[in-house]
Length: 270
Image (cartoon, rainbow, N blue to C red; front, top):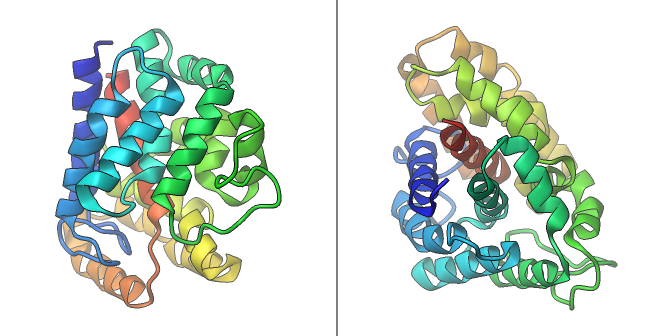
């Protein structure tokens, strides 16, 4: 697949995610957490060239995209998106079965890729990032990304994708999008599917396991509720929940990142 087509698919995925009224996360209906929709629009445009640069190594794509985002908006708006989108973009370049190609890309990541990804994470400084007794991103990378991500995977859904070959994207996000095809805001269906399936990693890092699990339980009825109603009819309830989450500083950012990756993968599969 050509680089221009991959970049277009990435931009479309980001636009579609931003258009959906995702409770707790930034979207076109409401800002939040010190960010507005325009910050994410600028971040998409800044990151897209590096993420989809033909032939570029995985780590370089990630670091350059994070650095470009930092220069454009001055804060971390898309680290999780970048960590998920870069392997998908490389896989699409290879052609063939997308899921198998993602697995090959992840397996081929070397120590130079690990060093670049460590630098990218440290530069982005995501909310709740602490220190780690092993494989701390502020130190020199001494292991492959497969080992570093495996250590982080139990508590971080982005790392889990690197360990499982993006299993949640292919088995949860894409089916949710397929079921919502033709309806308004299909991204909302994927977002709620992720939020209901497991505690959001971003909330867990900042507020702890109990709070993240409480939000997951609150989300649990929503996928069925969305499937049974016209999405627009639920907008008042969605925005009320959105306001409550934002008032409590609860941002399901990882669920949003997984949603973008699912939308990106869907467009690449087309």
